[in-house]
Length: 311
Image (cartoon, rainbow, N blue to C red):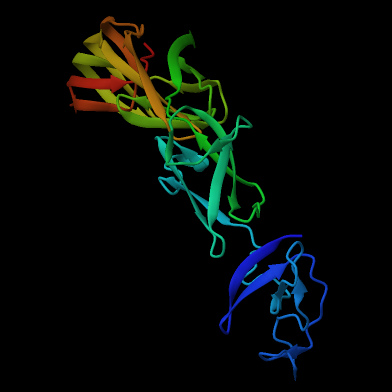
């Protein structure tokens, strides 16, 4: 048997008795008016007190709280600030609980199956990884909220990237980027040639390749006859023509992105001096690619060609 002092009925203090078994068919000060009013029709005999009665026992506790608290969790930033729902910065977690009846007694949370903690104030998550935050609350009459789950992914670390290159044959060059990312995993690598984007390679890696033919140049100066362009080539008769190889630097930058959007880059330079048959050509037919910059007249040539000569 237990009693709850729950409210006021008229001038009488109303109590709820857990073992009261009366009925409620009447109302009024004398409980003699047909109609239900939530008060028992017969007094409750108070155990242990001679001739003590509660004349107005409640059928149910006044304002009886059967509802659990409502708990919500709020991260700051409110939404993931990286790619694919990954956070790339610290997250402040705030837990709020409401209970409109008996009030909140305590709120509990735990992270990744660890020990339960009593929530007191916002806390900060700052380490890379995946977080499963379970939480629930308890009100002042013992109603317990069902456990809830909030999931969060964090990766604040840029991937590692190391570029390499090889020249297996002719003018073909293979650029390779070897990457590593321990948390969100790799997403893509972009290859740049002298700061101009050349190719985006997507996928989980960890190895990415870009295969290309490198552009090289050489300069042609001298006296010649009968220049003629046909089939993508410039043909001429060299009276005396000098072909110079041009050396220049190529910078290739590889930029790696992980699935969270973190990026890192590394660069390699290639001092190229491809063999393109430099030398002096006298009284000889010479075929050159038609891709050039400079001057070609009837007798004189001074131009820079791109490609490979065929003497």
